[in-house]
Image (cartoon, rainbow over all chains, first blue to last red; front, top):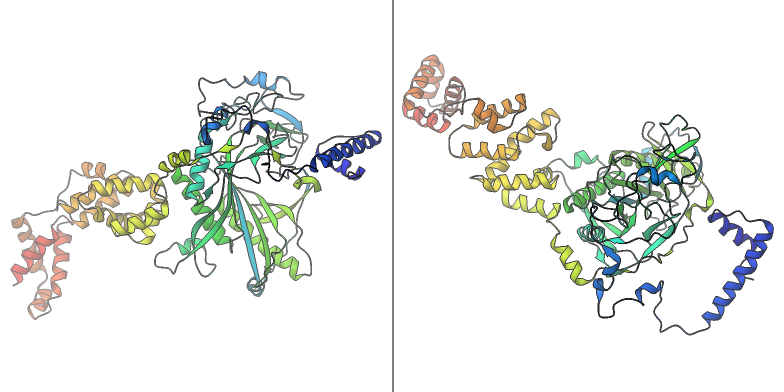
Length: 112
Length: 517
């Protein structure tokens, strides 16, 4: 058992999740099962494989392009006209649980 | 940006008689984190406008509001600006850097994470040269002329790209006791974070570092560095240790400081506080502290323990950021001559002092104006001399900066040409400068208004004045004739005075010598 209930409580707290005692037991079990699987993967010798954080830098790219060109598809020019416009204020605030029509409003927080 | 999950703000009560002895046995160690907003037209990951002062929540879209499914697309200009700034700060640019998610909850961070860079930042290993006095003298003093200066190199650990958060307004609403208002216009504005090494030894050096940093960034044009509008923000990490000790003491982080002067004050206070705590047998707690500029004190901000666990991981929505040699070379082409190099050149080319070179390069636009004016003038050095000899003193007397000068660089150049070609005398120039300052008008306007005065080269008129002066001062004339030739100066002065400064001093000299000889 790598993950303890204490770990689950800590991570849940970081993620703003409220877990019942029962849910915590499930989480401990699920997370340990996932880590067990990772352990199995770790048995593979990957010393010759470059670490990959995401697939987008390895697949779906134009292999004929190198350097900055290769990822140019995922960048844009710095223009504010002619692209998709910002939302009207009213629309931006529409789904907010609380708003005064100008600002989003949230329960009091003390600045930094 | 992180630990803002605050429960309460607890004041530290400082009856703080820190003796000078303590200050010399302890050594402060300071590191600074500076956030600079980049002057792009649109945000870093979406095309919303970045302009300051728009109506709240009008420059927002699904991407910067953190709507589900919205994807970031990187603004190339932000990359170019960040790279340019990093180059100006002598950093090594990494060809490949990685965006990462910094996870924390705060209402002005709609996604619940900030897209930043973590273990693979855009640039590392830079530095800024600062000039610091050997003593801890105030930095105003160390900027004065001819003081013994030394150069210190302050390391820059890293420069990375990230997005800004929104703005929380805690006060100013009828229900501010219970509610915080959020404006997300700023969310997604591109920032660079510039992290210094803990190389800074005194509050004055911190001030100097920030001044130089701001100057360099302004020269590159990637930010307006406007602290009131939050375009430049600074946090300071500070600890103290017994002088000679290798290990660092426990540090405190000071936040919420909105001017360089306040940062210096906050550091002075915080260093004294830490020494006091240690001397009293206490321990420094690693914590975030807020600076209250009205009281001149820092206060502990009791934050939740979790605050520092950001669980960074690579941003799956963005591919690696690749700035290859070709792109880097294009960006490098836009790198202007930086202030330090320009100062050295001004000293060399125009013969100005170090100090005046500093003043003239305080902003890129001023340096450009000076240089253009000097080069267009008949004698560039005379322009420099007039700025130094006539303009600076008057500005100082008025307590004005050179940017507030009624006489522009062009005006100085025009006046320099008039003196150079003998149209006006030095004395007339002084009087015209005085009028410029009195009327708050540029030199050419005043010169016009005064009817384009010229120094008198009318020999017969001058000879008449000379005769009168000689007649009016028989005693001095006798002394001169008796061999006291220094009296010549007296007579020149009298003639100049009688001509209200309009006489050509050289001519007066000539005529007098002839007459007396």
